Length: 149
Figure 1 (tube, rainbow, N blue to C red):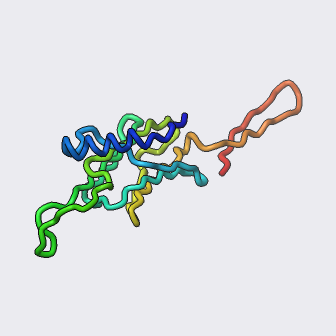
Figure 2 (figure 1 turned 90 degrees about the vertical axis):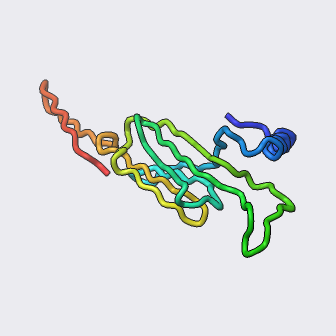
């Protein structure tokens, strides 16, 4: 499903955030997901996030990613901060992905580099493709399973 680009909604959302303060509802974060061999990788765009605010968890086949970006306030370098433009979203960002049964939840890893959080989801051994060897030679058929990579 695709969503149409609506610049009016974006501007209204930005105006509401500026007038009412930071949004209490966590904002979504853009992501890419792809398979590479025996693992899936999910990359989240999170520029300017303090790595200490990142939380990645997996529970009941749900992957949850949370992060926070705070604005500058008070003084910086001995000078008071006064925004001239403020277009980058601030606040809490959150995304949940429903995972199937085919993942090894015990070995999920995450890395945050250059504003991109990469979560690696290994495929569980039981979910990896298998080559089935079919026997022949009479009324008795032997089916043997062997692991293939």
